[in-house]
Amino acid sequence: MKSTLQSHWDVESESTNQINTSWTKVNDEPNKKAPESDKQNKSSDKRYHRAGFYFKSCLCGAVPGMLVAGIVLAIAITFWMSSPQQTSTDVSTTNPTAAQSSTTVSTVATTVSTVATTVPTVVTTVPTVTTVPTATTVPTVTTVPTATTVPTVATTSATGSVCGVNMQWNATGITVAGVTGTNGGSLSQLNGPMGVSVFPNDSTLYVADMGNNRIMQWPMGAVSGSAISVSKPYDVFVDSVRNLYVAAYSNGQIKFFPNASTMSSVASTGWASSLDKPSCVHVKNNYIFVCDNGLDAIIRNGSQVAGLGGGPTGEIRRSYGLVADDNNTMYIANTDHHVIVKWLASSSVSSGGTVVAGSVIGTAGSTSTLLNTPTSVTRDSQGNLYVVDQGNHRIQLFCQYPTPTTIGVTIAGTGSAGSTSTTLSSPTNIALDSSLNVYVSDTGNHRVQMFQRIA
Image (tube, rainbow, N blue to C red; front, side, top):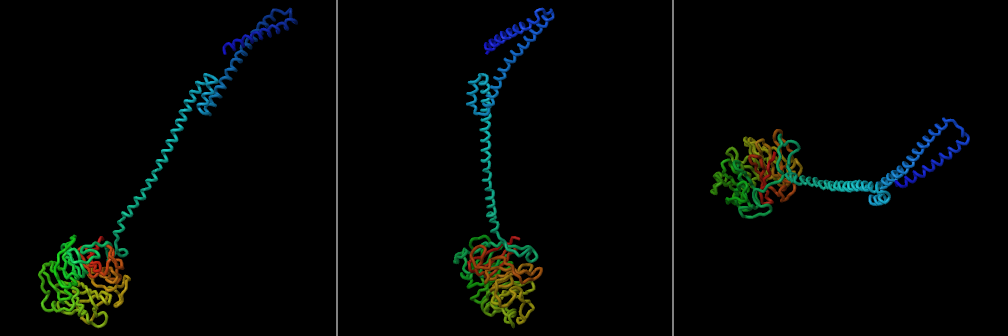
């Protein structure tokens, strides 16, 4: 490049000298006798032309340099826009300096491409983070609603409050005596249980196991009990000192077992041994109340106090349960009339009683105001009535406090016979403990079910 520029410089010098010589000759001919000042002008002109020559020379040298720089810049831009490998090859063959630039560019391009390639990998990890939707297995935590096995702890209550307070029972019963659906004579089985009573101090259960001719004593939580032999017991009552009173149906007697011993006697000489078909027994205020289905009457300490009266309200057509209050007023399950009647202690045999549950004497039904073959009744300290509605396979609660009502609330059973923990089959008798847990002799299922009060 240097030799080329030097030769170009020499050619330009010769051309300039020739131009200057010819220019001088042309000017000398009309002015051969020019004054001395003309010589000075010629000298300044030469200096002017020499400066022009230098300018042209510099210009001629700068133009190629700018051209080369433009080419290098264009190559660099092209290299940047194209693939690193091809660009580096083209630039290196064009100019060594450009080749060095291409190396830098290719390095930058490689770095850029590396960053570019790492960016997608970062982006692709984001979709794997979108496996978080698999954490939408959280809805499977909504299997907590099946753990809402809690719903299986279904409760039965009236709308709002029941009997002045919010009383609720677990609708799922617990078998506390017998084996569901299996009758037998072992100490862990029952056969058609009828009456049931609970000792208040420790909730020991006493069951009239009629089919096995015995009274079963069943400690709470035990899987079996102990037996006391009695012929065809229909009902059993335990008092506050654990004395047992048993209605021996086939013998026509009320049996007495002091302190739940195996030694028995007749509850009272005379009348207690000459009954017809005693089907229930209840003790209150030193009175022994007995249902006598042979007489269709209620006997109190040997005297008939209800039944055989005039009209439906004065009649007792079979009964398997009654309860008395502190005033000796009786609440009687008038089974064949499908009602519960209230009979005042002061009432005469012929005056009759008042219907407090079942609404219509002689009419069976399954609505909240009707009953179908009620077999037994008990009451709590507020006077509320708990009725065994045998034909409807349910337990009905009729509030008497604060205001008496004839609208029943189902607290156990579904209205249909069954052998599950929520159903009953032809229940016969009922008892309460001090916590108002409900015990039911589920006769058709050969068991006793407890429905726990939870509120």
